[in-house]
Image (cartoon, rainbow, N blue to C red; front, side, top):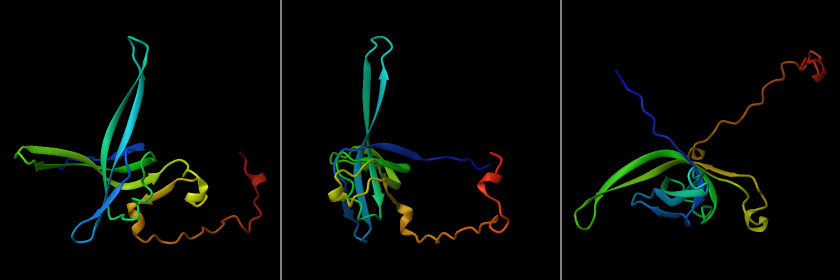
Length: 156
């Protein structure tokens, strides 16, 4: 019997520092950055608001032009999967590192001042899948076009 599993991460947070892009010996781009997510809650005993921040390391493959947009403080949406790697430190101790391998990154909110951003305030999407060609959208034919039906004929 085959078992099912899911490894999916969705984060919305702020960048802790500017993203860095490096290249593997074969030429593949590897962009890394850290993202902070926070949660707030009211302490039941003291009645005070408390806040906790978690930091997540993110790696994005084959998107070399992205680092210019991922600057400290920007709010982003990241979708991907968790991956844990192990390595030996200089003393021979085994260490583990868990990171998010991103499939999609979207810049959220306004882009700051319009002079440097090209004047747009909508989110900028940079999915990894954007590298694949997408078929052009074909408009659907109007099935009511020659029947004389208008909005006034719709009962709701």
